[in-house]
Length: 185
Image 1 (cartoon, rainbow, N blue to C red):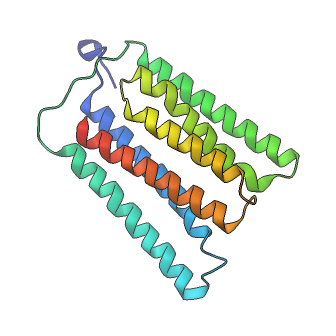
Image 2 (image 1 turned 30 degrees about the horizontal axis):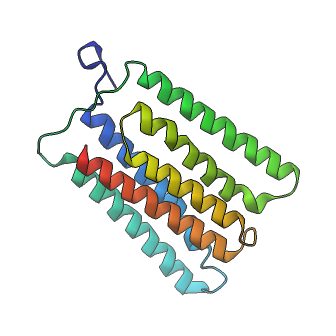
């Protein structure tokens, strides 16, 4: 959120907001990882794993907020005045690509590849954001998520191993980025 007086600067609130949103999406990936445990773990143990995942997700979001609200001098990153427009366009493109992938994969009855495709698109969407928001850690996030998606595409589609690796791997990458963004500013 920029006003005329802060145009061209990335506000601390926007940074924290982005970190919390990243943590929330990491939690969704974590749920995919937990679903990969289902073939090996049943009944109360699976419920316990899910409950533990919810607690880890809540703790990660709380830690992200805590890191982001610490009082210390913040670095001001210069970004283009058109960054909000670019952010919207990148996210619209990401949404269109994900919806397109879901329809295309569904059309060919390749439903199990949807999480891999989503991870690939999410990874690629970080690359332009790294440049336009002066967040070099997004290069790593985009590269990790893209590599993870490509690696999981080689595993048996929809298998527990793919869900475990993709879900927990993506969650870890996003939580690490969220914590870094919240802490470093």
